[in-house]
Length: 84
Image (cartoon, rainbow, N blue to C red; front, top):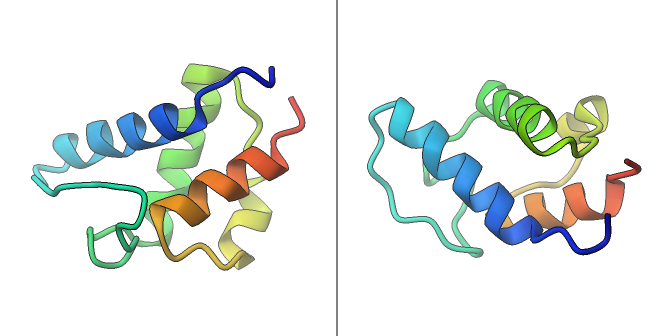
């Protein structure tokens, strides 16, 4: 599955998640995870949503210990660690 558009998948999932949380925030690749109000529990929920909807393996255990500070970092992490 190398033709997946990780950027679209992850940004859309985060936007949907934030909309459900009543947070109206602009998101781009350089958006800081902290600045848009996403905490570690949110990251897990977003990762699980990505796994379920897109059948992309996201190693959640490794995600919490990873250096994921921006949306770009999250995309790179998921892309590099997807072994589906």
